[in-house]
Length: 314
Ligand code: TIU
Image 1 (cartoon, rainbow, N blue to C red):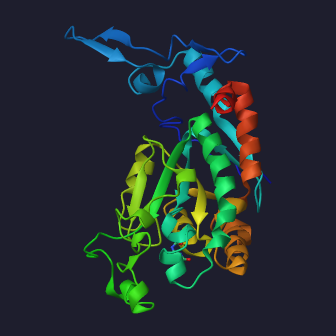
Image 2: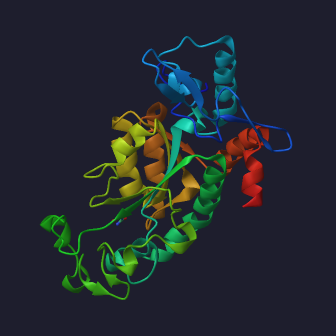
């Protein structure tokens, strides 16, 4: 059975950006759609000129024309993808889907950081880097929202509960000096996202004090304000920060798709069990997929729209 996304009548689309409101020729060139791109001027009763940016903005005040319906249907067809996943394939609208990359920081992936201070073999997390990088490139080429998170604390540790700080060997606790600066402290080199997955300028970076990306952050507001209702959740570690975030998101009504190879754990058995927990019981917490499945779905969509050309050119 295919899980399909039911549209919300009030706003099937968030405000379209210019890319989305243009029609591409098969050559990949963008042909501006007169109805949707640019500003249309309308005069109201008081004689003031009001600029509209097309149907998606004015639909609340004007009766949609037949061509608007066609544009809408065209947009839905162009943005809808089906991702192979367990327990079943899932259909999502890419304009309502964000990729969220959890805590791919030096503190977790490189020697000398928080992960190693806890006694872990940090090399086990490296497997997720290349799949995340491919997925990130495809998401950017598609024009999908991308969000990054970082776990860490203020330099004075005022946002770090004592119960969190006091664990582990005293010289290796949160805030202690290490080869990449103070462990798990914002602004220190170890807190940075690894260079292979560096955020682009427009991509929100959520600094979180906890394991879940929603706890004590503005992530929920940012997603809701962008009209996002599906998340592709990547990062580390599978059973801690990825899992906590998926659980928080699931309770908030987001559909979570977890590409298994885009996540990793210091404990391979926890990685496997964590993924099973997500997809068990009919997908009690979400869907488990793979980077290849997400890329295939995006590729298929981008071949129709021409967005793939941007990716291959990038
Ligand atoms: N980001 C994240 O998962 N934080 C952790 O502390 N993970 C561990 O597995 N320790």
